Image (cartoon, rainbow, N blue to C red):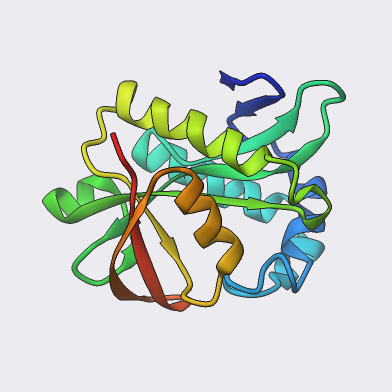
Length: 178
């Protein structure tokens, strides 16, 4: 668990699946993340199961963002692993030296504009560098996703190349400072 002034960032639990419907069922929130995931509404544990599998495979993955003052689930933030040769989701073991960790975030729309994503991403970035020993951390952001680009700028990231992701198309690579 990672604690910030306002947030608890913790490994997901199956109960988070119900709260995640507000995020994964919202076409605006999901516009740049592959669109609405209808399976989440039918099986709220589906997305949490996928998150926990990433933890099992990589000893890192998505964390639930929970507001400390009331325990409200706000979204997710964490480390995803890509194979930089094909830009497909993978594990550190399978991709070897081509594994590229990504710091990703997504909040339910009602929580946008309150600084939660910046606070959560900053804490996870520190954890990734200090506790996980990650050497290079990026965020992959759709070229039209101005909100996430502004967040990357606030985090001190620099834009480099554009790559083609296997599931959502073009993405700009934003490199995080150490």
